[in-house]
Image (cartoon, rainbow, N blue to C red):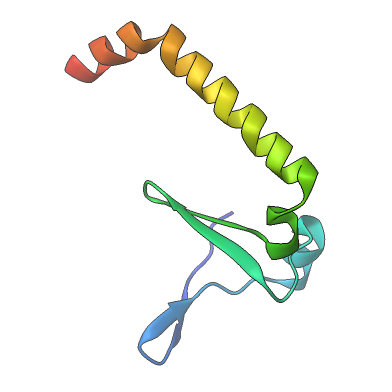
Length: 80
């Protein structure tokens, strides 16, 4: 989905529509993280739920496994 930022004073804002809120469960408070050049927005209440923490743990384990398993390939691609 492509969105345009709205100007608010000296800042810019992303408008989160009602439909986006309903689909994601985002309320009036969000958790914002920066990962590389990505901005990750999650519902604040979900950031501390056990199932969210478990999902983050499983993702980190899978990421680490892939990076370890394909380290040589990634290095060769980076040098190409």
